[in-house]
Image 1 (cartoon, rainbow, N blue to C red):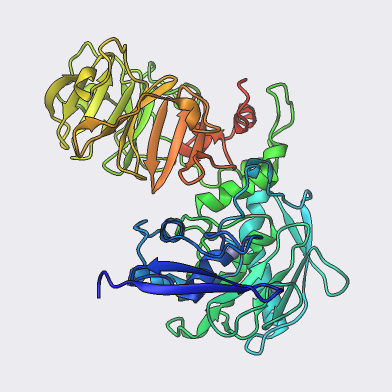
Image 2 (cartoon, rainbow, N blue to C red):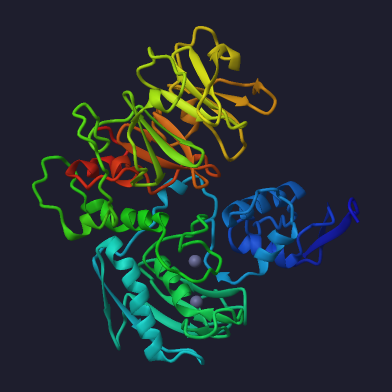
Length: 512
Ligand SMILES: [Zn+2]
Ligand SMILES: [Zn+2]
């Protein structure tokens, strides 16, 4: 069947009786009209254009499929393989994944409620879940979010509440009709609208029924997600986050991505704006970091404290976070969790590294699993067991001989290329081909909203993060700019550090 082409005519009838047709040749795995509808509806393909140009090119469709795959956490092949196709039919939230592309996107800010006490009202129940039960489950769902925004929710029985919860089917008057059983199960509107609608054609369960029954949709799991929208959050492409658009059960806890969104919407303004603030830490401020673990620092007096000093660099090696400062290295298996036995002197970890190397400015795990440690114009390459293999020069990468050193090296998970950054410029190296890509160096300003020089760049759990001084940014590879919730303070999010008055200064790009 491969290589067979289909002919698709798209015709638009005009008022005067003219008929315009567009012809497109599509590969055999071309999307169905239903799948095209999905990609339009959730923001992956542009809406119908004013000039009636309905004809999506094979390229634009494949790009849309890639975006959809990236958002779903699938490999971005651009091909409509069976796994990808299954996502078009999955139960999910009806809210768009990607808002309409706009040049001014950075100015379309999400908003919260602008207050701490928010009312809610349950208008009705469903055929399988009575109103009283819905009210209880809503209260449970709201309680999941409340501590992360310092919010209080008040239930009310009549009058207009901020968040109005109801069940409805098909067309229910808001311009977003439901689709009967399956696929879209609910949607919700951001503040100041705040309505949450659940599709009454679903069989709603409350977790007590058999979870293996695919026909039952768990109300609590969907409600926790929709509450996120009603509080102002958009969809996340982090699969383990609550704001991931596809239906997932069970929902046990919020992901760091959900929590960061709440901090941005509800806590950012409360953080002290200057060090002069004399306020004592408030309840909500301490909720910024819900689970601190105290690091087991040794008695060594000269040991730097990650909460109060800068670090030289951070990198992810073999799935763990390595933090370098002076002659020390900390290894963390998770954010905020330092592995037992660390920090250690890095000379005890990188066996064979010359003694004259007193700090590590950048390090990365190569595509072949070896680890390269950089200092000035040279680097040392270690095996995956941290034994020295060889010494090399920056010029081995094809970098200019006069280059005094690099500030950051990392391998992008977006294209598997190695980025070699020197302050304001960067080069891109193809490790598989063993050569520098043409057209480099380029200016760091291409990485929009990320200040440079960057001290470190890492890929952690599928996301790209940049670090500079006490701040870090999550980078959106699709938009080629920093994600809107950032920067955030590095010490409190990555290391086991208590909140400090200073951290409030690290949620904006303005240097102190
Ligand atoms: Zn949603
Ligand atoms: Zn609705």
